[in-house]
Image 1 (cartoon, rainbow, N blue to C red):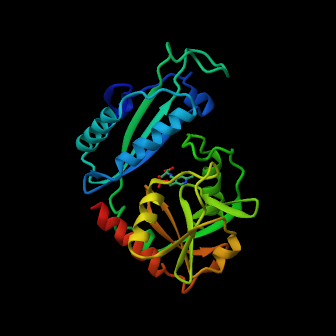
Image 2: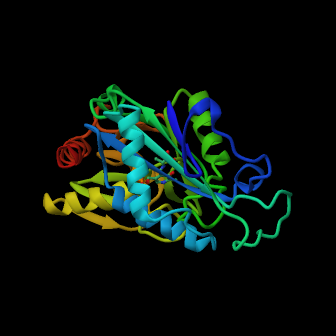
Image 3: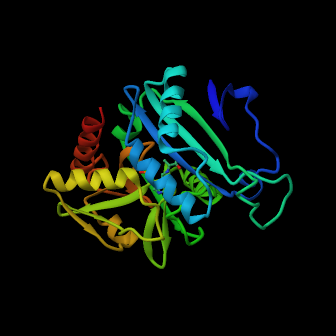
Length: 281
Ligand code: PDD
């Protein structure tokens, strides 16, 4: 695989970053995951805009322009022959060669930018989406700025491990009695034809897929309500689903052992997945 690091395309075994990089020492960095279907980038603009926002919120400088980023994305897709998969992009604050809590001077310290592709055949025609996901609920103990897409992913990772240990596929996070989002996706349930999801705030990531799917739902005359909801409401729902760039619309068929509907992907989640893939391809 050819990867990109700080202006260079290199074989993955030759790409290196400093051990003092603040991304490595302090999780001081942001990332984006963009999907590739049929060799095309899905919603690159949305990801580029969110990246810029994440960088601004952390007083970080962009390592390159949006046009350059697009060019690198396209080049990596081309050289690695990705027809279906993901592109991971990470920008960290870099380092001035030592460990310090104080940010290094941005005039003299360049951010580190890393990008690589992940080949994922079957992303669109996914067996997991046909089956639907089983989720568990766990407490949300992440920091309070989840709208910034930082690389602090230890708790989401632990959440997925807890789900795995419980024989489930993923976890939804609960704060003050309400569902915030999934470990790496936004969360929704459907009751009597109405789609319910948490409104945007600093409590959740502003999903690029969420934005597209809510627009598509409205265009398809589906009813959408953005409000806080509890895990018990979701357990009593007709169906549920999650959205993310890496899994598009993923039906949820079980929550904390409670089977939703007949235990197969619901009609609204299934339809939204189809619409999303149709529009993307
Ligand atoms: N995760 N919420 C969280 C906490 C996320 O990490 C993600 C994305 C989303 C969905 O956002 P989007 O639709 O823009 O992908 C919501 C990515 C895919 C990841 O960490 O791999």
